[in-house]
Image 1 (spheres, one colour):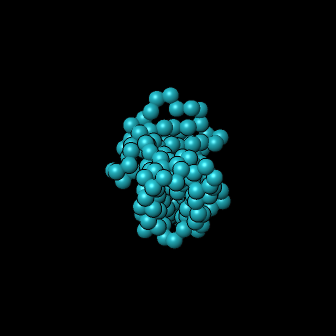
Image 2 (spheres, helix red, strand yellow; image 1 turned 180 degrees about the horizontal axis):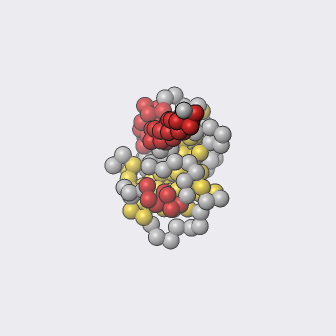
Image 3 (cartoon, one colour; image 1 turned 135 degrees about the vertical axis):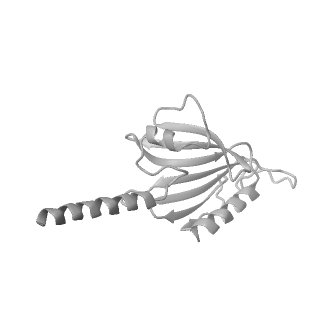
Length: 172
């Protein structure tokens, strides 16, 4: 009788653990923080792998919401996934930042922090979502900077580099 209860208890524990593992949503694309490079390669089925990724990184080509060509970066520390990023290809318009910021607000809610454009031509918005910190980063070239030496011609169209970074948060 006691043995039957122990077996039943063990089975319930294993079933509960399996259900919890199955319900866990990925942290970045189809990957979860702490995955190994081999696990990420197996999970990443949507994008085209880029050969020659540096040690500790995996690179892919894809697009963000079908409209923005992007490089997808998976970064590992001690063999475990700690960062994922979309690096948008080609020069972007400053309005693209606002559009992506609004999409991220719709998905994750109000940002935890919003920084204004600084003299170096950068601005950033961050969110916290469970075990993930999300950062939308804009880097403008010299034409987009507001500081000394900035090109203030009315028709100047600053080239903008955009990144959306996802970081695993320790202890979350």
